[in-house]
Amino acid sequence: MTPQHILVLRSGAVGDFILTTPVLATLRQAYPNAFLTVAGHPARTILAEHLVDERLDIDNAGWAPYFSESGPTDQALSISRYDLIINYLPDKDGTLTRNLSNACRGQVISHSPHPPEDGSRHIIDHLLQGLAPLDLPLKREPNVAVSDAKRDAPFAILHPGSGSLSKNWPLDRYIDLGSRLSNQGPIAWSLGPAEDAICEQIERLEHDHTILSGMTLTDLGATIASAPVYVGNDTGITHLAAATGTPTVALFGPTDNRIWGPVGSIVRTLTGDAETPTEDRLNQISVDEVLNTVNQLISK
Image 1 (cartoon, one colour):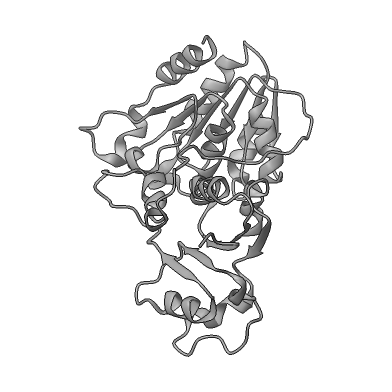
Image 2: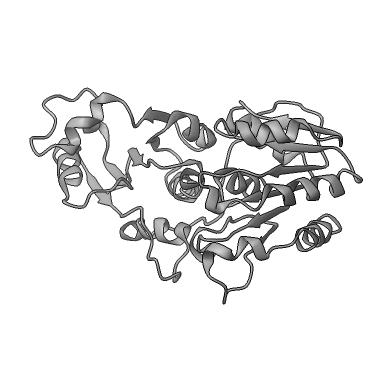
């Protein structure tokens, strides 16, 4: 029976959600007339507003009983309307899956959000594997919504931060790169809410630049999509850049890019020497190497 109401549950950071959009695109393609709902963090699920009919907040207190042994006592979240639920929330003991199955009227598929650590499968392929029981033609490319916000397009967007200092290419190299690239056009620096120290150093730069901060992901995506090139660390915004189709240079160090590398039409991932300990690999990536990669991408 073709499902009419589908729910996908996915938490995690920005990159985690972007790398889940192939699942939503696959479901939308297979079931164009179904009512498709995604439950996640609203600031991130907005990136899938073009793929889904409804977005629920995964932090809503109504979800809490589904993680307890006793289960929910009411149907405040109207789980009973769904005839297909795809769950990517951690559920080691099966409690969540059991409660969802008891509450809904159809099939519940729970699939671990954690891919194998041996590098044998990219996270996108791992997440799509959760749809295997449905035997659907798969769409592997990330698919994100961007706004129609109009901004002056910079020549390059640089994102020097991430969720972990260990994932950051040295800031002085970013500044050197930005200075050299500024000879070709204005530079925009994309900064997250917890990167005040980086912001202070960027504000003192003499070359033509702007700072992008405090934007919605769809507005930031629109700005990135307008730029000829993007350079960033292993972070959600780098996945966003790759998904918009902007030529993207991703700088990876301690994270396995075979699992977590950004996917897009024009992406180059620089990782340093594979024989070097992972914590030292970012230091092996030179400004010249990044600059040469940027020039190769924009010349195509």
